[in-house]
Length: 185
Image 1 (cartoon, helix red, strand yellow):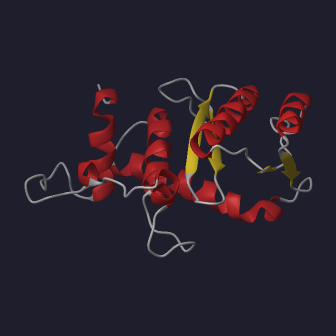
Image 2 (image 1 turned 90 degrees about the vertical axis):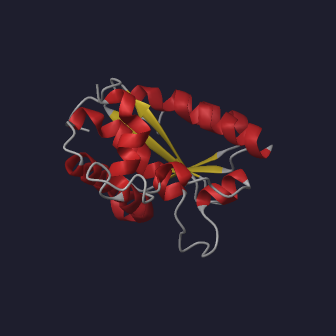
């Protein structure tokens, strides 16, 4: 991102479980932090599902194609699947997903008249919402439901007649302010 977030991040790493469609987002101050978050995610999967990640599909960025990542993946039996250099169309699904998240975050910031430094909070909210939205993969369950094995609780983000006023005009604005009120100062 062009602006450093309120927490000091300049980048975000999106990891998606292909089985459930559940997305996990990490905020990075440096691209070199990617390796630590890949390890954290691999451990999360191991603890959550009691099985290892089978493969990691990535673009050809140096944050993914390096000896640290390669050695770690090999030690865990995880296959690295990089796209061909200079061919983002090979990674089309991930590119579209990233664009959707960034555009959703930008829309939230603009609709709430918030400074760009809150981009990470908006990205986090976009991922949270996408994880709790039905997808074409499964018409009757959300990625969150497949991941957590329970229905998501969305009562904290809905607008009821009691909360519907000029400060809570639509879902995204209410949800974003409700979740991150402590950051607005």
